[in-house]
Length: 409
Image (tube, rainbow, N blue to C red):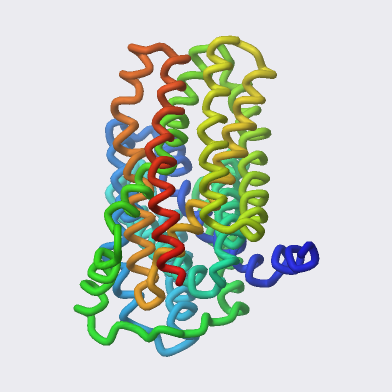
């Protein structure tokens, strides 16, 4: 069993998952954190900078055009690789175009270029998710998903922290040129990886590609319950993470302490959590992983309650960050693998885009009332509430488990 595990861990498929995740993670912060820093540096009005958050809409609406990638196959490189290569090359050009704009002189052109970057970045996400689902066997989805998520995190770290550091040494335009060049990693990965075997056919008409994925999903038993589970499984974890920075500052930690510990312990704990989670998924399966990781996620939130009671302690802060990020990484690997398992391979792009869009809904909804709740309950009770918010998702797991095993038969 151990030799099989190591073979899976170091297989070319896992390397492809990691590199594709990296390629998808790099563009995300280039149209948010780095772009905001560039515009601030160019003395663009703060109200205008705030409006630029709207360029990120394609990430939440990507299911609307996902059917295109299920319906049409480009002439070269196959159904998935053809689209991946095309989108990666266009995305590189869009980043170069964004780097050539001037926020101070033509902010509207910056917005247009940034929108194209997010549109093609979101489109790349759609096709890469579909590729991963179709390339990996069901028992590989957990480990493959953890490699993808970790690659995504590394890409975000390089673009976010690395981009800001580079901006102190070179111009922001040059930063975007360098990041565009780094995306060639994704291009070479696409050229060298294999096209997944087509086992279930493709939609024959555009109507079939648009309508059938939703009909296929909602015709299955307990479709709404499964969707509700996706909305609720990480609710407590998302609720807690929404206000961690104000929480740390309120306890009297300096920005430097928060930044250093969050980057040092938070990033690497999430990476390790994803790898541990993916490895355990290979051994114990998706459903048992959802149980174990979900319980650990909920328990880890209580470390914030402990930190709130202890107060300003760097040791307690490090422990809270490590536990939360470690268990969150584990939970995410099982969560993403489960979502992938729900998709029909005829409509992978559309169904996965729909489910992954739902994944972000709770964070958006929770962000609004979370501050009000924390203000009126205090931090210890707020994080106890976050732990309780994780319970509805766990309570749905028995029914989710029965349906999963029934679908597998």
